[in-house]
Image (cartoon, rainbow, N blue to C red; front, side):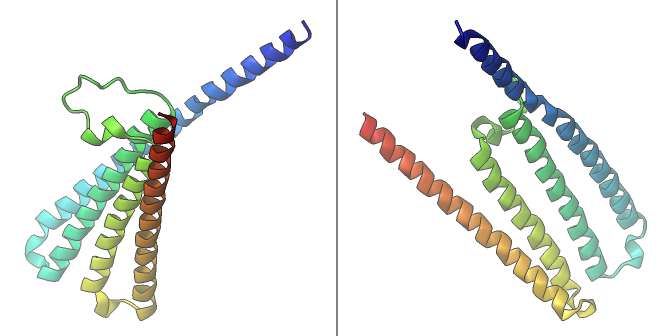
Amino acid sequence: MSNTPRNASMAIMGNMIFWSRWLQAPLYLGLIVAQGVYVFLFLKELTHLVADANTFTENQIMLIVLGLIDVVMIANLLIMVIIGGYETFVSRLQLKEHPDQPQWLAHVNATTMKIKLSMALIGISSIHLLKTFINAEHMANDTIYWQVVIHLTFIVSAIAMAVTDFIMNKSIAVAHAHEH
């Protein structure tokens, strides 16, 4: 009988911890607002490009287009975090029959999210680095150097995460093989 209050307390605490995942929902809603800001920024830059196209050099147009691509890649990153994070950490989206369900969502988990996010960061970093190289004559050598170092750090981190994921999956597969 003395364990009954303790068991009830543990059940209440477990439920509170489980339901605390909903505290993340406002964070994902905030990222949706940030996505709206990126749409506004994209449209503003696109309007600037179209309205003033005849005044730009080819390099300037290329830099503006790379900026637009950068905004799209960041928006893609936001979508991955919003949808994948919500699905992984808060609640299922119940999209099984929806024809527009992203293919990657069917097999999303925390590890695949990390790898997808790291690949998106590498893509965004690549665009920034390309913009730097195109505009190198106006950039300080230190700035170029540190952008390359940061980009390489993203690449090494992504490789380390992928290798770790491979080793973990291989270990799990070996453990399951020994169980059967």
